[in-house]
Amino acid sequence: MPLRYVATKKMTKGVLSVGMPPIALKNATRIAGFWYLIWALNGMYSLLFVPPKIVVAGDAVATGNNMLAHEFLFKTLIISDIIGIVLTVVLLLALYRLFESVNERLSKLMVAFLIVLVPCTFILGAFNITSLMILKGEVLKSFEVAQRQDVAFLFLKISNYATITFTAFWGIWLFPLAILVYKSRFLPRFLGVWLAINGVAYLVQSFTALFLPNYKGMIFNLSWPAMIGEFVFLLWLLVMGANIKHVENQVDPGIDSPNRGL
Image 1 (cartoon, rainbow, N blue to C red):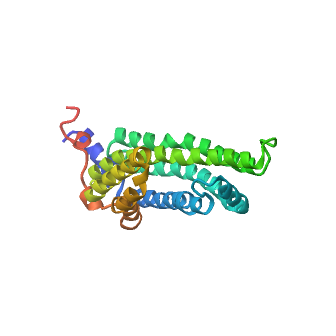
Image 2: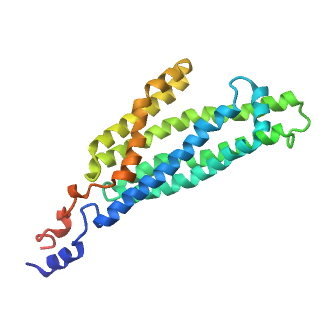
Image 3: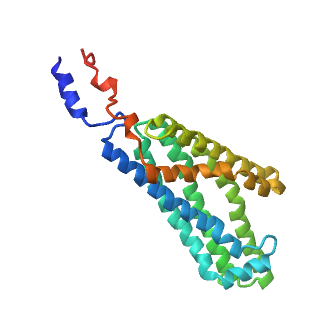
């Protein structure tokens, strides 16, 4: 047996075919699940908890009064967006580390599809701050109160319209992630399928809001079973972790083959 082959076998002993030891794979899986959970909870706060308490559809006066009456709550929305940016970067780093050895190109594509939303979030955060400053009379001081309320409401509506685009990318980034999960061997394949369905649901919601806005509420309610896919995935990462039995002792033949380099 060639000495080179013996040395290679020693270096790869205890390392799975995914490129890391079993304990490292388990830790990487649960770390990714933890950051995914924190990221999801932060997103739910900024999308589902705060806006209904502030924004009154079609009523700039009521919305403006709510913003001034609940100024601290509105500011927490801005802080939540900033935290969300940080969590997005941390989550993507964790997922990239987990799936890089599965397929590096798909892992980079997954990162790219979600990271593009980071600068957009900065801009929308600036719009939210501007709308609050307008209502407080710190800018556009020459405008009447009703005019300031209309302008502030316009900035909020722009942020709301941007959510349509955001929703599309929330779906698009799930497709490479779904393929990575499906091909990983250390996670069940049904999670990959469910994530892909979840991505389709996001796209359907985005296109419905754009082309058929009157039906977006109905589509949102119908798509809930598909939308659970992300939560099942993150909980699986956090609670169940990686199933190393499917990848244990599977070494890349391109590394360990005794015929390599002969």
